[in-house]
Length: 266
Image 1 (tube, rainbow, N blue to C red):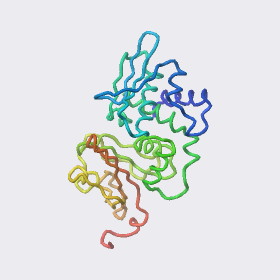
Image 2 (image 1 turned 180 degrees about the vertical axis):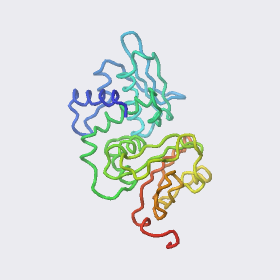
Image 3 (image 1 turned 30 degrees about the vertical axis):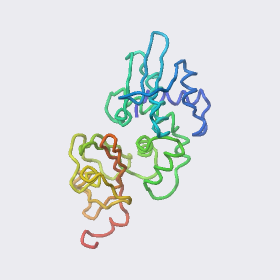
Image 4 (image 1 turned 120 degrees about the vertical axis):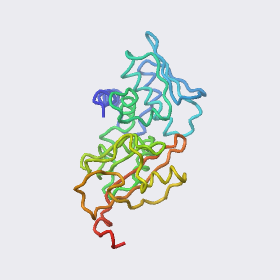
């Protein structure tokens, strides 16, 4: 995560005395920071910010129906206001912009990291983690608590969660980025620009537009390139589809149960 982005968010959390997830009125913070805020129908963008010499106006697409996506879009534009006011005069951000967490040096990635820390303060986030095996339901529950997107919640979990996972974002069958917990067992994953493995659950969505409701067992080679992985190591893969941009979030974690078995035992 960008140090500047996180520091800027922490500063606002302190200034506005935020101690609980529902104590984060993003629209009020925007006004308090000296910008104008409005919502109106827009085409081609979920959020925009326009800077003048002394002021800025943040506009959010009123057609956004999902409250989590709307809230993250607002915080993202506030991130541009706090971090980039002296760099550009205008930003127009679409849904793809809100998926950009790992493009080095990207101002969209910085705005995303700012929004993630502001909406999910690390101390509060960690205090709500459950001491139980990972499941995608835990990400969904945290997303509901903080009213944040699945993507931003998943990224936060890789950084501060209590179970090692990897999250892959792919679009049109191509891997765009990966985020992993620091203690994840595999070091060398399939990288940006590679095609999805033909045994991945994510590719199944690309072909059929359907995704299994439950986690599926996959072999290490589907997502990772480590050659020292035990031949009896297996992973769960479970996906969340983003049909509007033909994209998939793939959650991958070690299957403790199946990894104790040999390939020919099931």
